[in-house]
Length: 298
Image (tube, rainbow, N blue to C red; front, side):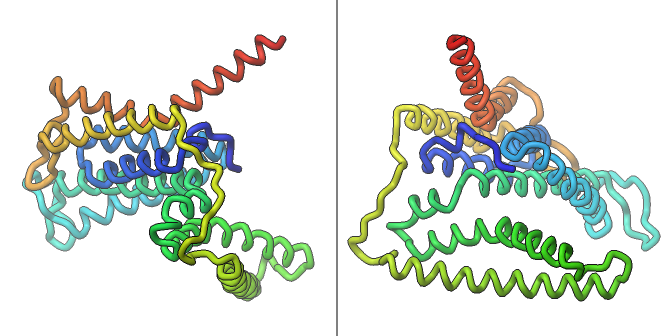
């Protein structure tokens, strides 16, 4: 269940800029400290947005992905100079390939977690608002794509529960369950295609994408949005300068080496934390204000 999020109330450009920094840096940085910071902040923000359900979902896919990726990399990559053992095939098992597999696994789950937050915050109306004038078709495709998986999942549960209530599902028989799943999947796919056609006809009848068409929007760029945008640009620029200057460089092959300490490196870590914790800080601040207002009313 989606919870109230104060950061989602900011202007869509502010939300988009924040996720460009978070997702881009999560993909670009190989420093293990930066990976850890991004993972912790992404997991925390996801739990703030979706509650206990988000925590269970994240843990459900994170643990298998981390284990699978961490084990697959040493099995196929044998680079590195620190040999720990030899596999039955005769290939060496190196410390560098093992550590790189763990880092790649955390990068993967961190990016997926950030994208889940992005999908929750950047709603379809925000995507249409940002890209509707410049690329109306692209904005519509993006908004429909972002909503595709959640809508399909919800509809699948509805159809399956309906089939179960009518007694068309069987728990014990394997092939009967497969047949039921195929029927449910067929109904969901038909529903998705029909919904896509209805949406296309609806937008065409409203004149979407025609030149000169205007659209009403509730989004206004306020002073708080300006402050948040400046905050993201300053912190993001500082972290990018630290990356460009080599203060957080880290490599795994042929030997594990990199900058994990030092005054400038530590300052980049601190600013990186300040950048990623912006939604958390905004939520805590607004919750405190609400409690203070309730206390004054009493």
